[in-house]
Image 1 (spheres, rainbow, N blue to C red):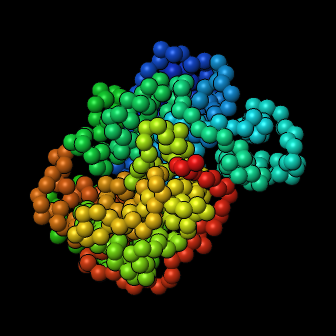
Image 2 (image 1 turned 60 degrees about the vertical axis):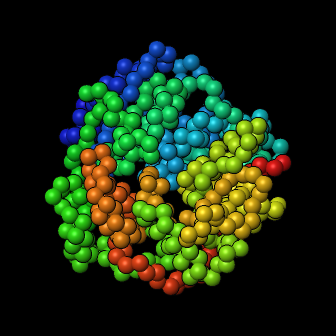
Image 3 (image 1 turned 45 degrees about the vertical axis):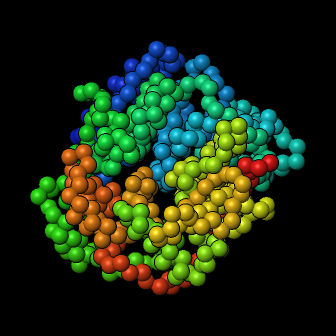
Length: 507
């Protein structure tokens, strides 16, 4: 075991050493800190699984640091640099922007799977700046760009390792330096995939084609992708290729949210008994709240987590009514969830433009206002490194007992959105929020249904996923009531506009 792994617990150190052996077979020696050129015949997969709090992210971060020390370049979807035969690379990926941002907030340079599938085409002049920032070229002289602007870019890149962010810090817009997007044609090298319980079989096979060495990090207690009968992609791996972290790593003081999540593993615990545990935790620690109603103010940035779609729609309607939104208007600050892209196959390039900027199914965005063209919306993509975009939008407002949603305004074709003040627990996987509201009456309904998933009561799997979305505070909502908002909707907290890129489906 290396000196780096000595910081880790016994089970993490065992996993670290196993991954060290895997990487050594791929030509990356973490012990001596050197690499050999990529061998094309290499193809290997390993999974590190464990429940919330078991230290998967800490282990991933330690491995990223060790690979960087060994000379492996960490790449992202915004810029790869020029290929070299002796160059070894690592990409850290997550299924959604929000999941990737959780890693970035912990110091791990992560991007989404979609962003690694599509690569930007840079203006040749500005690509010289990207090469210089990434350490692959000399400091350039660019017409119209001052020395001070270049230094701003360098400082930003040193702190954040983001090429687009650095160019934006220099005063450029995305449309200045990115000319378009293309599907990746060449394979990559080493891939770390977080939240891999969210992967379906097709995504898994796509990743295996791209990465000769693939490491999956996932939680076996999460909900499996729809249509996979409760199975995760890492369940198929043979003995020795799937390592489990069993020790729970807590903060200096016990985390009551994690304690509740792990209490669900007790096969004898009933829903009523679990609710009593929530009440007891709330009496001892203000990080858990046994709430009698939903807080409308929190819903603007942190959706209520529900099981039933009908509950989701009712809560959204109550949220909009509380803020005075009419059926044919959308207020700046309202949350949305991308529901896909409505474009014919002939508009493949425009689809790539939208997806590459983070507008993929499940992406969480905030409506900032109407765009400059009819049917366009200004949007803030939660978790994206360049969050501010203007996109052709089709926004659907669902209503109870109505088969078709109301569309207050829409482009002819583009990204489609549903309201995001409440989301299903399935859709919330991979995301985390500082404060999470869980709608307990829905979980009670799941318990009454006596349904199982992958050998576990459905309500327990739902409760585990919902609870572990909370980073610092959990509200367990027991009644179907909504508290009046204390503040008007606003976008002031999203005012950091670094680079806005117009995404059109109609040009």
